[in-house]
Length: 447
Image 1 (cartoon, rainbow, N blue to C red):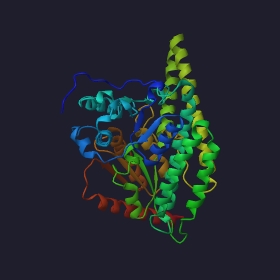
Image 2: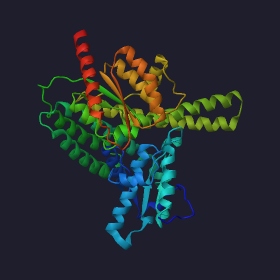
Image 3: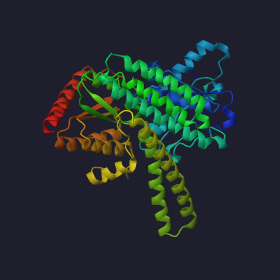
Image 4: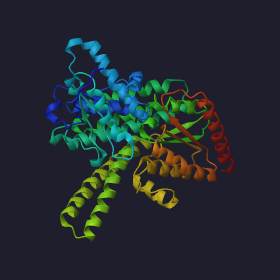
């Protein structure tokens, strides 16, 4: 492998530079990634979701094993894509025709370093320095002004967020129907077909923000899916999943955890994508408020004005997201009883009451711990914490919630993931589900 001396870290890409290029989107959640790609295409960006987990050998080869597991997965995805494109296009393959979409987050999570490390790896191959990486950050709530024309940014952000809400709803519909389906496999096939139909709808209607037309299709999907339920199947133990967002959502990486839990008798509710997206805006608003009060005490006018602008920006962003999310869930919940998503301010209040953790420690742990508190209040029969092996926020979650759940006698399971097959994994899940079933039966007896 030849090595270039110049390392080019992620650079900003202005809208006009996207013309004629392909935006490569890694798959975290299958439905969400494809709806996001469709939204990009609706705004004139040639976007495609890369195949995932086909390049794990490459991901391992070009990482040391010390990196966060999702870094290995996404590293393998982009290298596998490049290999396939080279084989397909031959001499006409031009790395400059592609832009790799890899968002980031500020620390302490290692996610913020993925794009930088992957840039170094790509630069180590001849010619791949021309393949650009663009990395929207949580520091400005994943603003996309540098990807699209300025007059498109707000419309795109609204449509992209709406696509995430719809993907969350479709996933929750799947988890609600599949454990009770009258014919094995019918729900998976239907949801796959429905996701493709919705991707087409986002490509067609998204740019014009014709959300009503998209919601009409969502309602049709929900009504049809309800017919798959076998009413003779009794209720099952309700299991809540928390943890690191990629591992929770990426079925290949967590080795189809949701299906295995369902196989052993569970109805599952996984944390949503929008929970994290809303949290980013909420955390930005919290920090802006603290900055404003600090500068007000010190009578520093210019920083105070900047903080006030951030309050309006983050606050307006959060207000819109909560409005759009609530509207979609209300419309769907009129048809089927899927669980509503957690409001972030409610999660913080719940965490303050429990005195287990604080939103001042801004990691994914505050979301996981507060969600577990809500699961406990909501009568869930077990909690699963899914995370990359050695993930600091998730290990903190585990240490804090185990005593809390033990007192409440609610079963709890840690699922640390790497690329290895753990031989006792299913036996552990069976044991956990046995405990969850006992909790469920005891809850029914008390009622």
